[in-house]
Structures are given as structure tokens and as C-alpha cells.
Image 1 (cartoon, rainbow over the protein chains, first blue to last red):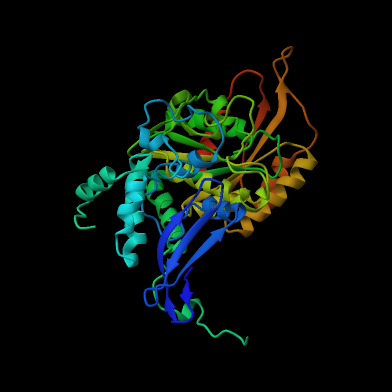
Image 2: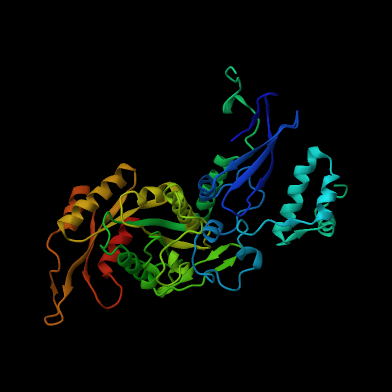
Length: 153
Length: 277
């Protein structure tokens, strides 16, 4: 799947993916030449069809975990995978609510140049999601920059 | 407004960032990589429900495990009606290790994966997503679960991995696509003419799909009479012999109904092993 900015005749680049938790899925693509951004919005049925394939629009950002499709989709026993499972593995990444942004973090993100803001937002959001951090604050952003070697972002 | 002029997929030369086809290809490679340590993968199939596929699968696994040094595994591909784990006394919970999901272990050390371990008692297989328009994606998801049963279970080295298929003609073709190393399939039938017709269709479908038929097992061929000790007929017909003749494959055995325990004869196990040589 490719997105083309027809005005510029330029392939658009993937910016970010959102799963708001209502079964739908959204992905944003931006034209690097003119900055125009479009969002692909999929309804629950379309979203589930993609999820059922075990693939991710925009490409995978995390390695697949054992039986992630089963664990995310089969409605069954809560203890099916036992109690000795590490927390990150038992949690369903897609079913977790995405981390929220504190007002201070939003202000700080707004100071990031617009042409890289989407990418920076994605990096912080994934950092928080992977660590089950519910809210992104300036402190979390500082920690992410230090952990990921992103000083200056 | 006139027609819009724009380039199409192959005319745009940039990389497809989503790489969906590559992601699917990677899933296939994970199955292949996992099955490298498995000597033979064999499907147990039938066109008809209720013929005892799971019983035969469990009996083969139990009987063959002591004969095989590296062990035997069973994938219960009958996702909606899992029974083989119970027949092998394999129970959950499963555990996740860095190498994958550790299979449950049943009698004779048989390693088992099944939706039996995932579902609450008495509850059917259900999906977390809303039910509307489920028919569109359900088949894809079921194939994905089967793929993960093959690829994400830390089977370890095995001499034999048996796949207990759901009733129907196309299940074995799905397995063959997921696991190109599939050595072949064994068909299970009842003696009856109805079963003959149904299993014949399934075997034809499998053969047309390029899947090697290893043999036929006729289940419920009579019962042990408690009075005389002999085997008395249970169903009319000779579907096993007819199917073996039609497809020129061996009749691996005829299994009498048993209310006590899971097992097949040593002669049947010998013949089954012979097909793997």
C-alpha cells in the first residue's frame, strides 16, 4: 500500500498509526515536498480484517511476540497463559489504551518543528506504550530522550 | 472537474513502507524455522465429523511416543471443537518463554497445543472483536491461529507432529500452505457408505492439492463383545477398504470402538511408521 500526493506526484511517507480503542484504525501519511497530510480511516470491519492477518499498516515497529494474534483476539480464559508470564507479554499491546498526553507535554511537543512533530510524537507514544506508562509528561519525555539517545529532540 | 491524472502502485517506485506482503512472508518463514526441528508433519483428516479423528490422533500419538526418541507433538487444529488434549490428559495453563509458548504435556510425554487451553469450560471459541460482519475476517483469523500454533510453540525437537484437522475437505490444504514440509495426510473414516462418500471427496480434494495420502484408518470397526470377547460389527459397510483401493493407499488399520482408554494396535502403529520411512 502506497499513498501518492497527486499534486506533487510524490509518494507520501507514513507518519503515525492510531488505534483509539473503538475498533477502528487510522494511519496518517505526509507529503515530504508540500507537507500535505492525509489520514486513512478504517471502520471496525476493515480494521479487524487487517488485524486478522497479523500485519501492521505502516510496517512493524516491534518484533512479534509469541501467539500475539491468539492472545489479542481469542476471548477465553484469563489464566490461559499462566501467572508466570512477564507483564509485558501478558498484556495485549493493541488493547491497551494509548497513553495520554499531559498539557505540559503537549506544550512541549508543540515546540518541535512541524515537519518532524509526527515522528517525535510517535517515538514518545511507543516508548510509553512499551513500558505501560499511562501518561506522557515532560519527565517521561526526558527519560525517553535519555534512554533512546535522542538528546535534542 | 476532469479526470485526475496520477501514477498507480507499480509506477510509483518508492518502497512500500507497510510491506504487508513481506510481513506475511515473514510469518511463513517463522513456521518453516520452527518446523526445522520436526522430523515429519502429518495431518489427520476426514471429510466427515464424528468419525473419531481426534481419537485416532490421540491414539497414534500415545502409541508412537514411546517408539520415538525425540518425541511426538499434536496440534489440535479443530479450533471450534477441541477434544484431543483431553484425550491425552494434557492441561494448561500454557507458559510463555523467550523461545515461544511452551506446549502442554500429556500422556507418554506428548506435547500438545489446543484452543482447549484457551477457552473457559463449556464456552465456545469466541473473538474479542464485535460480531458484526464477522464472516469477513473469521476465516483469516482462524488461519492465523493455526499459523501461530505451528510457529510460536516451542516444540523443541520432535520426530513427529500430528495435526488433528477439523471436519471438511479444505483444512488439509490450509495446513499444506502454512507448512510446506507436510509429509502427507491420513484419512479417518467410519465403515459406512455415507462416510465413504464424504471422505472420498476430502481425499480427492487433498490429492488434487498435491498432498500425499499416506493411508486410511477405519474407525469404529465393530466393538468388543463383553460376553464372547470377540469383535462384533457396529456399522455396516467397508469404507476403509474401498477408499484404500480407490486411492491405492494402504489401509493402515481397523479400530474397534472402545469405551475404555485410547489406543490402537501395534500392527497399525507399525504400518503407520512404515509410511513415514
